[in-house]
Image 1 (tube, helix red, strand yellow):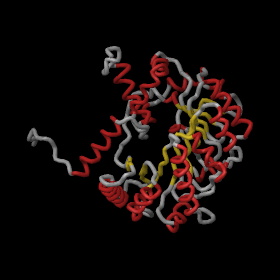
Image 2 (cartoon, one colour):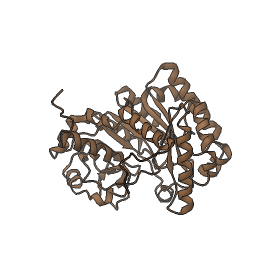
Image 3 (cartoon, rainbow, N blue to C red):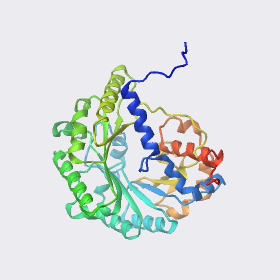
Image 4 (cartoon, helix red, strand yellow):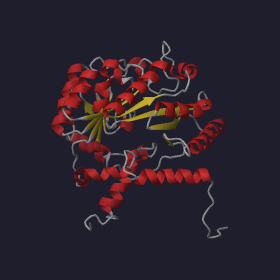
Length: 366
């Protein structure tokens, strides 16, 4: 029975709401309203055209020096130990420049920093005013290249699933222990970032499950000691009662820690996939895997080829992008496929529909 009164929420619940509101209103990299700065490209999309991408997500290699127990790429990697050739990487870089791509995210199916040409590529992007970001396990940085990385990057996200050497060895399963090396690398990156005043965020992504939930508080303490900017918690669990208890426990701990920690802590534990109309914004980001396949979006690389635009080993990126096939695949998207995933492009699409389609902001009444 409704009383007409506001529903009571615990202090932790209210804190989560406040954090979300602050992220939404603040001028920071996590604000979804930044999509509005690409209004020219949005208008092209709404008029049935594919603009040049703002960002390209690039997997230089699927080789990795870790063997994380939960990695869904591990089986694929066993049969597909490949990386994009140096010549092809720099051909891609030239194509990105011609198209006006603003940033490139170096990620993996593997560890991107293992590619033999990676530092030359990062320097090329920096020299040609293309920003980069890096998702990495943090174990392979060359000390002589710290300055290169910091000056070129908007953010570096370290996949760190443990706050101790013992747990790191258990989860990431490197051939030799690398925990202290990773911690030292984070410290070097942060010190150099602060020394030169670079506009680069340093974050940690921590995958929570039964093997590391006991270190959650220690993980936050470690992040505070390292002075990282944020810790992003994700879940590696199923739908069993035990798995739900782990997530309930982690959520309560994170919300309490968020009250005092100087490090931004956030998670996506209870963010459920939502069904939306056909995606508008995915052409703003290009996706290229280490085997050369080019996908409509990063969530569609497991769709049995249905959303594969082409392969950069067979055709140049600049010829594939915006091609007839690209447009056909974009128009043929199945919202039921996308409904399986939580995806920031859905948030961007919400803004696009509210602002550009429904004109809820009265954009011409400035």
